[in-house]
Each structure stands twice: as structure tokens, then as C-alpha cells.
Length: 333
Length: 79
Image (cartoon, rainbow over all chains, first blue to last red; front, top):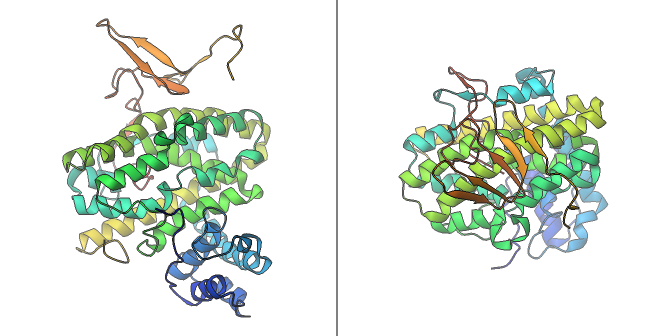
């Protein structure tokens, strides 16, 4: 098993030009930046191009030279794509998420729905998800979970004091507390093995929907920009606060479908771990950051709102596909 | 790497939620058994509703009538 996957298949002119530049050292076409400015901010072409550019900072791609990570033309393209994505997110979050205080926004996230209102992916999977749906869900989420916690590590040098210590405490747990076999990335690979999926890094990139790429791209975007450190903290806090109850439902789904012990283990671990992470994120990381830098409250709120927006879009796309009897993947498993 | 011996171990109380304490932790239960957690930080259940007792599983959280404000924002993820 190699750490690197090959470049994905292009999904439009931007990703086509980018793959050409990376594979054959072609120049980016002169209209790439204007295309980036006018592209669909949540569409396949922009989201894939952004995902490819971010991947250069993680494991990279087989056959793509490491020097591309800091190529000025590619960084310029990345900035144009990010501006389009970020502008759309800022506009949509302002509409959909009018919260003005972080403590209220997090308190709202701490309230569990007493019953499923039909929009909850984890409720659906717990109640009636099929093994096939659990496999599709895991294949999609693998784009994140095989690099789980990596996008958030970028923020550590941008924090200080309590926020930094709290963030590192959570990340240490995510990275297995010193045990490679307990890395959450590894626990997810073990889950995938139970589900009969390929555990190679980015194996399912071609299959991944634009909605899934947007979820991961948000993390990379916020992690890689110091100016967005408050939003990254809000993003991670949202995931940790909402994860524990959702993980319990997914563990139930894995038990009900007989998915296997590692599949159950991954979600059971997240029930317990994220109950702790929620505490650290709210009190130490968010609390510590805002005590030190109170002006970042609006950025933390943006990170919360953007995460809710993109996770809702992801859930809605899966549930819509399954209700219509379609696969939620671009390519069948 | 080890905390100085004179440093007291801090326990943080989340109102309505768990006790948060540095691990590893052993909890002596009513029936005489002992549960141990090796986590660097441990959340100990105080509401007794946890399905993973004595560890917090967030069962203490308030519930709303649907449509709730937090109807699953995790996309079935976890971190």
C-alpha cells in the first residue's frame, strides 16, 4: 500500500487544466483565474481543483513532484478558488446562521433533537440504513477520516496559551496518544476493512461528491490561513460538539447491520472521545482563544455556521440520493 | 513529561454535565468493581444516564421537540 494516490479524473475546465499542469508540467491557461472567479462555488469542478491543490500540502499525489506545493502560479489559482468559495460561504452563512454569540451558538448545538425530523443522516442510518448505505457513507467520509485531525494540526502554531494546550490535548487523542494502532485515521481504515472497502489513502476521491469535498476543503482552507484561525476553531468545535450523539447512532447502525467489530469500535471510540473533546474545545480552546483574542468571536461564529451549512448539504445530498434509490457516489463501489 | 508531584490534579465541573479530569483515571463503582480509562483527559458521567457509564457519552444533554436546532450537524462524522 503506497501512501499516495494518483491524480483524480477532472470534472471540468479548472480541474482539467490543473491536472494537466501537475501531470505534464503544462502551464495553466491564461483564463484560469477568471474561470475560478466565476465558477460554481460548491460545484464539482471548483471543489475538486481546490481539493487537489490542498492535497499538495498533505500526502500529495503519485507522479506529482513535491515542488508543486509552493508553485506561485498554483498558489495564485488556489487563492482565486478560495476567494470564490469563501465569498459564497460568507454570504450563505450570513443568511442561514444569524447567531451573534459563540456561547449561544454552541449551546444550540448541544441540544439533541428528541426525534428525527427527517433531515438527520445519522438517525436515518441508525434506524434503517442498509449495509450498502453504510459502505457508501464510509467511502465518502474516508476523504476526511483517512487524514482525520490533520487539517486541524495547521492551527496549533497560530494559537497561544490555553487554546494551544487544549487543541494539542485533543489532537494527541486523535493521533492515538502515542500509539500508531490507535490513530483515529487507523481506526477508520480498520472500519473500512470491516466494510470491505479499499483503505488506500484517497482511493475514493473520484467517487466523492462535491458536497463531501466541500466539507474537507473547508477544514483545509481554515487550517492553512492564520487569518482564519478563529473559524478553524469554530469548525472543529462544531464537529466535536455534535459528534458524540451522532457516533452513538452510527455505532448502533453498525451493530444492527452486523458490520463488524472494527466498524463498531470506530464509532464507540468517538462517542467517548468526543464527549471529552467537546469539553476541551468549548472550555479551553474556544474559551481560551476568545479570552485572548475577543475580536475573533465573529470568525468563530463563521466557522460554526459554515460547518453546519456544509454538513447539512452533505447529509441532504446523501438522503436525497438514497430516497431516489440512487448511489450517493459518483462511481459505484 | 510528568507533572511535578506537588501539582494538584484539577477536576473541572461542567454544569449539568461530566467531571473532566486528567487521566488515567480509575472509578470505583457501587458494586465494588473498578473501571479504568487511559485517556489523557477523561469525562466522568455524573447524570448516570450514560450507556458507557462511568464515562460520559453526552446523554445528559437537553432534548428539544423537532425540528431541533441541532438536528445532526455532523453528517455522521466524528473527529
